[in-house]
Image (tube, rainbow, N blue to C red; front, top):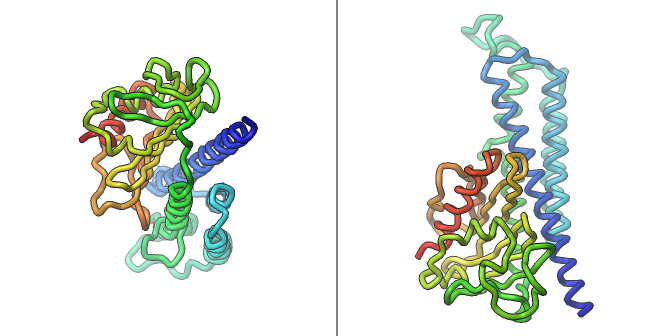
Length: 306
């Protein structure tokens, strides 16, 4: 019994850390998006804003790498090294006193391109997202997600002693991390009416379980009433879903990571998708609860469609 409690506690801590990683990655992308909004031109450029944004992006990306190191320590030294190189590059290339040279040819002195603060911010954001750069913040983010989810895919799943959600002929091993399952939560099959996890209900609501055995093979879900960590498989390749549904725009989200199968996942336009070196990551957040619920349902349609 003590061993089961320790295993459940370890899983709970890993899920909390994974959600923290997602929070930091989301904050990082929002910081980048905020900078991109500023360079559209309707902003009084301020060197203090530039330096603050640069500092926040470097700090947040460091927090994200730290989370990855906790979740998957082996091999994380490379991520810390890349982040250190990113920090040093930003400190050297985007200083407040950097020399921007002469005005650009053919440009008026008052044009945006000749405002030092604008050029500094534009150059910084171009580097942050540059896919051709040896190092960049977005390349670091994508490598971080590959590192974490490849490590999670190699970990053993809960054994047959876990309760199982029965979906027709399909089975999902369940681990209750607090309020996610009705009743004692011991071994044996339970129906969806015995599960309190709102995101799992939304994800599996339209499953025709007789036609989705591949996706439910070796599937498991760690659940609370509002949080879901789900691992399944498509064509023997693991996929991961993280979702929170609290009926609140600032907290509700759904996230998918899956290895590259040679084609782009066919998700709804409501998901922001990014190609990583070894897979795909997709996010939906910042929407009203009804839209988020719809997006989680559509994600289930994609994952469990025959």
